[in-house]
Image (cartoon, rainbow, N blue to C red):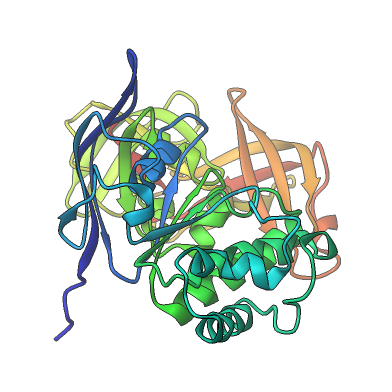
Length: 376
């Protein structure tokens, strides 16, 4: 039998107002011990304010914040079992790496031998062994971020808070640090809570994510469920790239649904029900990588989609733009009626990008399990 996850952080109906503006609106959220949890959303959505309230830098206007069942809403930041890593590293330039990492222990008057031992452990944990004598200006951006991580972890917090920790790094280093952060969290086993506006960052590292918009929680789910089963147009559009179109629900049965849309020259067929009212308005979300691209030469029949009726999930179009991205290529295809759909193909060989050209007529096709259907 699987042991139920233990809740470590609870936001109970938490609201934060700045004058008449509501930055966080009645948020109810539980985070489990040992989770790598991400708060995700556009700028101004309230995610950083929620993090700052947990850290103690802001006070809730209403509601409670609990860690291990204790209400910490009015406890000063330095007495909370959390530590924070900032976007700007916030390392002291005049101190050595070792002194930066030891700073919190020095303030707490931890004995020098114990302090030295824990600094050595923390530097090894973030792969900075042997660099304790250097100054921050002798380090790369990624190394300075590791110093900030080591300084936060050395105090052994119950929760580590990360506020856009990778945004100051270049793309390749960000990707490397994403992997290192995930491995580090797994190694130390404490709860990580990261705030980011970068969907790739959240999906790559977090075990669960909360998507926020205008102070409200939109959806809390695993990265896979957020991407494949969004609960609203906002989440579908915010997480990754998507083709979205409005339609009308014609058929809704246990094992199939049919949607008609004026934006596509085809009906959309699904191999499951939608649980919407007959003829109600729905939105179809179709990810670019789930659309197949086929040649449409003269006399060439459309591809056979075994899981959909004839002339469903199939649209004729013309390629208007191709964007080569190395590992994949993006195709913008204008279908009958003028709507442009985006399809994505992996370049499995060095010649794959030459398979299609601009202004070529093509078929777009997708399987019945591919689209997500949204009721709001």
